[in-house]
Length: 629
Image (cartoon, rainbow, N blue to C red; front, side, top):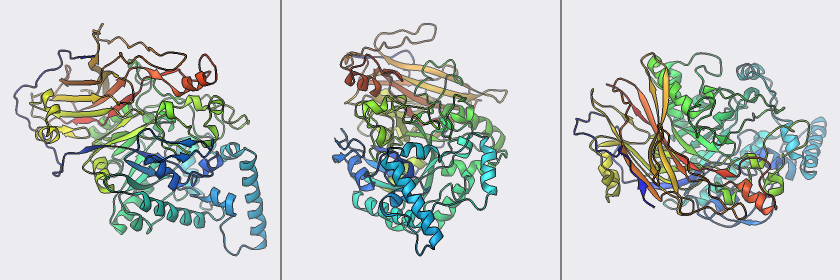
């Protein structure tokens, strides 16, 4: 099927291009696929929820293509296509501790008689909860209460006697060393990269402010420090300062990746710090330097946009997840601008006008947040977020019937997402972190859609097919993640290309999402359909949707729908050279079956009782920012 190339496929006029693209020379990049957010049995919540066996060795083996045993179902599982890199991001909080207590008891030396009694009670309580299948309820009881996040964080910081679980430091130190040993064994430069990382899991008052922290340090160098946790501080600024200080000490780089901003109660991308103070220029500079990318999609929902915040966007209702991480789950979810990536990008433009620096000038990636030790982002090969909920019967139910968590998501509420796509010079720790820092990365909800996005002058669609396409485009354009500066009265062109995953469905359309700062200082947004499959025509500026053509008895879809490749050269019909703006690409596949439908078919049901039967998978590019001169 050929793709429709509307009149926006225009060559830019021969105008003087005056932009600054600051980048060191490097070889043509290769497209690498990975997961930057994977939990093993070393995470306390993973162990309590049925993962007692999938350790870092299992996680690396599975990601690199080997068959392994699922920790919940005990069946053999394997990826259809191996990953190129993996970050094991176990929670720094009580790292390895629940595993140690369950298997070997509290890791403490020379306890007195009262401590031994307390340890015995703790060990038996945890073992009984896990052995009786009540580990999820035990975990739910550890969650925070629903309260104002800023007040909760301040309350924590004032409590200088905050309890640490018994044996926590010994367990964490031992587990960290074992994980680093695994990373050393599985790292194969040029073939598979084991990036070192962990998760900092601050959740004040039920507001998710979690970050995955990544370093390009070798395992040997990483033995010099212990992961910083929210037990050290719940404030992101304190994490950033630790990253800066430790980077100097060990001569390595760190970056932090915020995730699940969709359930942050407006705090992830707020105009105030978690201390309740207005964002300063220094705060903004440190944040954008240490958090160059964010995770836009994963199991616990999609964080691109929300229909309450982007009511004109017909695709803003994707992957909604209206449940906070707190003790009593309720129906009080409210979408706030600080929760979603598109709104944050707009807030960044407003703050930049005030501070001269944009704290939210970030790129985007996707990852899984799997707690099974298995990085699975494919709908037909989705093994659940938690090991205890991996079977179709369990995914269809709430994970618990206790009073603590009777209102909440099921496995069918979640999506099998996502993946991090990185245009890197080589498959090594340093090259991957280089690409993340320059934001030449993008996100997929699962399918390995090949996406390229450039902005500049004198561009041509033919440039995409040249053998030296990257060198040719780099000489006259900036890639995704870049800043574009033009002379007055000139207009940039945007070159975009997307190709389908050979193992997945065809493509529906490519859209470009624009945000700009209007004359009154308020940020606006517009979604443009740029190129699409078939012979559809815009009707009142809207492109008709592709109807789902899925066999309800088998889950098969119509391969005749959509296009294998879509590409376009586009200019913004509303461009104003005096307005700061960002542009990013959203690629939509044709509709395919969700894992919930495939489960329902296997269970002999007509349709899933929770969640949609259909999903329209997508990819998101990192933005390109236009800066007026």
